[in-house]
Amino acid sequence: MRALLVSVFILCCITQGIAQGKAQTIKARLVSETELDAERFVGADELGSLFYIQDQVIYRKRGNRIFSFSNVDLGEISQVDASNPFKILLFYKDFNSVIILDNNMNELSQRLDFTGETEFNNVLFVGNSSQNNIWLYSDDNKLHLYNYQKLAEEVQTQAMTFYQEDFRALAIASTFKNVWIQSESEVLRFNEYGNYVETYPIQGVERIFPFQKGLVCYQKGSFEYRTGQERRTIDLAYKGIIENISVSGSSLFIYDGSKVLQYELSL
Image 1 (tube, rainbow, N blue to C red):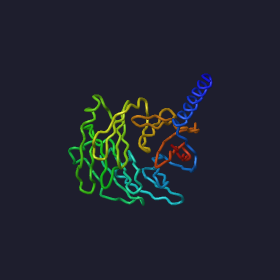
Image 2 (cartoon, helix red, strand yellow; image 1 turned 90 degrees about the vertical axis):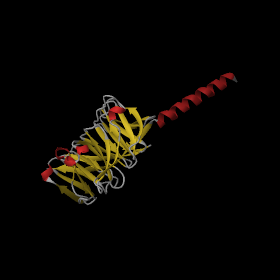
Image 3 (cartoon, one colour; image 1 turned 180 degrees about the vertical axis):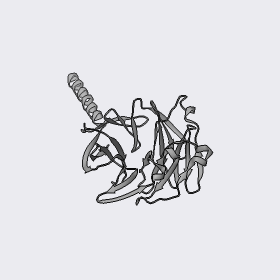
Image 4 (cartoon, rainbow, N blue to C red; image 1 turned 120 degrees about the horizontal axis):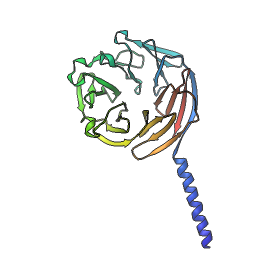
């Protein structure tokens, strides 16, 4: 009887371990491949549109419909945030300026030129936020929530060096509710009001993308889902060339230089 109970206990442990092992993996299922000849693939939105740049012109492609926008006077587009398909941010770092477009690639507001704003003499990164707000990360190492209709700052955080002495931002990523600032070793998360929420380590991670309640992290050809308390491997069969990556909604997009592969992520 005792031997039987021990056997049952061991079997339960093994079964639980297998279940936990499965829970640690996120499945990635290939759902589409789209041919794309582009100088730079810069992202996708929740509507399935693909954004890419050719000769300083940005294009939005959805099915057979293509929209475009260009402002050659501002030169190269440094960053594109298409997380909100109805409020697309174009950041021109060399001119310290942002242009905001709607889903037809028309300008939503006047060009935002931060050169005259003493707080924003050198904007490093931009990110979408709710309503008429956008996030700016400036060379003062602070996050600024900026209302582009009022042309006024709504929120300013502490400098990131308050949370980590030698913090140097590499990128920011945002949703309506959160914004993450990435350094070489850590991510700092703030909520929509600019309140600090948490810090967690991401040593060696190259790119971060908001997904569900956390981030998809890319490192040396592999993907992982992370929150402050959780790490889960993304089971992705793809082993080819990766020129750029985008995460939108429940999908991961990979551009290999000639086509965009879309993978559905299942928690």
